[in-house]
Length: 297
Image 1 (cartoon, rainbow, N blue to C red):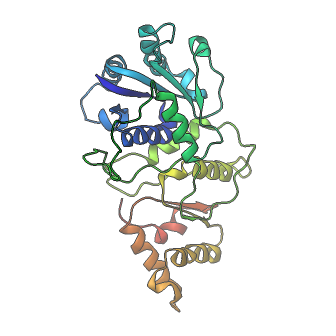
Image 2 (cartoon, one colour; image 1 turned 30 degrees about the horizontal axis):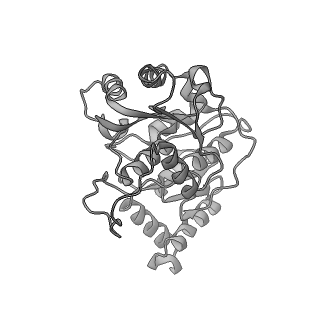
Image 3 (cartoon, one colour; image 1 turned 90 degrees about the vertical axis):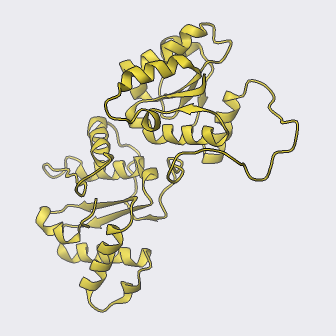
């Protein structure tokens, strides 16, 4: 038996991965779709269903989208079937985006991570999973030994902005466009790229392209260490905003007299470093920004 199965929808993958990583840091044995069922040719749906049954407990990552997915419904129902009265705490609902508890979930105790900072969220999560007093018989070591974690850096807690960031202020009244945002995230998040991943938001003026880009940047900011907004409508502002990035990166060429030298230095840095997102706002066409795009995936 595994300890915890993380039940979530794709749009909430970032916060779900933070939850999974946090629990593994606390030595829980976690089953997480993105990490454990990524092998080609395997039935992801079958594996998820089996994991939901074989794990002792299920953490349901709740949001409006969670209740519209037939797959997540099957996952939490499997946990409820084993503990209909909820006395064993086999299903732990965790609200990550404002939503209404529905159906059988309405009568279960839940925790909410809304408006919590990372440390508060971690404490709330661990407290919810606690079934008894867990004080060890001996004082724990200062450093944990033998703890296996997944490769790569720990996911940053959603809501914390990257260290290099210049995106305009988020629209607090933004609503809708969930399908576009989800499709955009899926396209930009595909692994094993053979070419630089680019996505274009296009349409008539005033329909909200810029607002969608801003919302995307904030919603998925925890996936990047660098998010840079470039005013690309005019060549002069495009060059200036792009070159300004060299100062944030503290590149040796940042004070070069020739602007092309600075631009090339930024391109070279982007070519050799992962975890960044460039947003060219109001670009006229692909040709106007082609010389500013790195060449590697």
